[in-house]
Length: 249
Length: 309
Image (cartoon, rainbow over all chains, first blue to last red; front, side):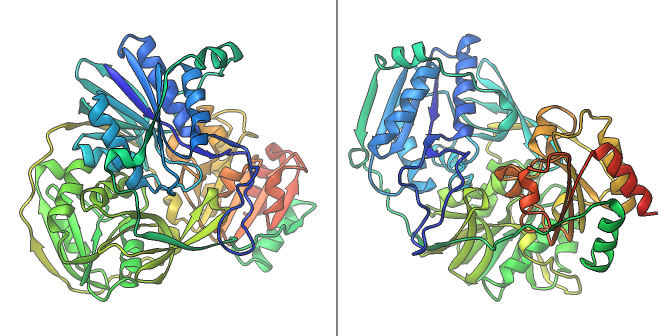
């Protein structure tokens, strides 16, 4: 079966972003960009399923500006067989991404789509679920384990009170959580080999999808600043401060 | 037009997250309805009907809603969506799982985990692990929104709303609930606790978390952890606090052996008072702690427990 893995190009999670003083957004010029960490986990899972003989092909898909090719090349280096870039310069929100991914899924007919549960830039946590709804497929979000057997996927999910196990009938959507796996390192030889793997570019306009959104960002501001307080020399001082100064105990 | 809240519950009781979401709903519109989709859940409906601000409780009671499966709950909400200006759910694992399906089927965008309501169509939310706040405006005919519960007061009881049964939509049939492993605890829930004690990489084992348990017991606190402790297997996944775990905003947050990575800070910035105990004076946590103490947690935490006697 085919596994499709959407991958997003985001500001690297180690970067402490700066809010522009004019309130128009976050400064991403010359900032390091990487594959969304949860999508790395999704890619790793797809590879493990393929290595276990559950899948025959892994296709990586990214939507956005031409530079998204970089994360596709990384996906190919991890082991994806093909990459597809859906190119647009429109600022894509989750619903638009879900529609574009549906158009690709309708063509490619994967049995499983694994996405990261959320992207570390917008922290939206929507795309997988929206794609599942548009495709009318079952979903298992926040997955920490996936077992595929025939046309069923048994998924362990991390939920607020602990763990939950559900069984989906394929084709299905799974979104990856932190502990699904630990992604492999990409080796330089694999990066070189990846250059020879097919990477197709499709214009989003050719997919007949409306990518405009009626949600506008009016402004982006700094969060309330939390400055450092004081260091205390011993527990007795701490307790006294908490009781008498902070009034929290 | 009314506002619909998808209630989070376990068929026996209403989750606290629903109360914060109802408060947010009252800021979106004057008439709030609550959807209780469950199985043998009339008790939950009755409780929901007592929440101040709620005008009507819609109950869909059927086997396919017993376990909170997103496909089925979302389908029920979609069947009822006509006539609502807003559809809200808590930004908990439950609400985050369900609501985007509703948005996509209604062909509208969703606004996730709002922290503030400026006007019924303009909301604030955190992006980049809380390093920026975005103010966004939705012009969609229905606003589909998940709510960060720590940013809204829980609604109180005292009302007497109408309860109305609605026809249950058919199950999707493509998902089967198998089992759940949920720890029962007498401790308060992380998201609503007044005091939280959390441990990180500085703790060396699951047993060492017992020290924090003693401290938590002294303070009547909830216990949480940073990602490092969960990844190491010392504590369960639902203890994780941070960008992709739980968001907490207690009166007092005590970080023990936690370095203070950006992703962890994202989960605690709403705390009133942050205390940090760490043996590394350069740990980033000290840059946000109101009170910091450098030292060995294995000495300091027992001292703290004794001092609280």
